Amino acid sequence: MNCDPNAYSYSLLMSAFCERDRLEDAEKLWEEMRKKEIEPDVVSYNTMIGGFCKIGNVGRAEEFFREMGLVGIDATVSTYEHLVKGYCNIEDVDSAVLVYKDMFRKDFRPDVLTLDMVVTLLCDKGRIKEAMEFFKSGVGKFDLVPKGKSYEALIKGLCVEGRMDEGLKLQTEMVGKGFEPNSEIYEAFIDGYIRQGNDEMAEALRKEMLQTPSAETTEQ
Image (cartoon, rainbow, N blue to C red; front, side):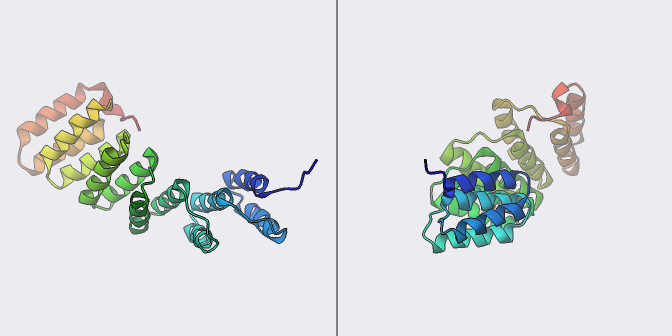
């Protein structure tokens, strides 16, 4: 029986180390694999890229990504998702957007978490127009169902920009998807209406918030 390790078995071991943030040990296995002239496959590369993105060392992940291309291994949706999430975690919004757009060009379907992270980060940076474009394209092209966090970030951003009608429309859509507004969403609308001088609407929403149990939290 042949028990010699192959790329698959090395990937399993490296994955176990990456899950525990033991990237030094994972790299030792990588080097051992190369010394034995065992060629890494796409799973091997994705394992290392995901591990380094997880700990915030996206620069090292990029090195593995570039090497993939040099040796002729095509990136998969998992490759791109690891990179997008890695960039979002270090708040490198421009790099996250570039990789996310590349995913779309290749017709890779992102998972909902990837969409939520990009949309939320764009909103945090005040780039509401871009966030809305990504949100709509994710829902429209890939039939994704965003979580409450994306809706909350977008509604708050729209309210900050004074786009109250758009915020209300999005809230209606959010409720239709099964998410109820929390206190932060109510407060965003209240602040927005106060800035517009619409104290009557602000007071009505404040009363509604106090009577709404879901104003405690929004499902994420």
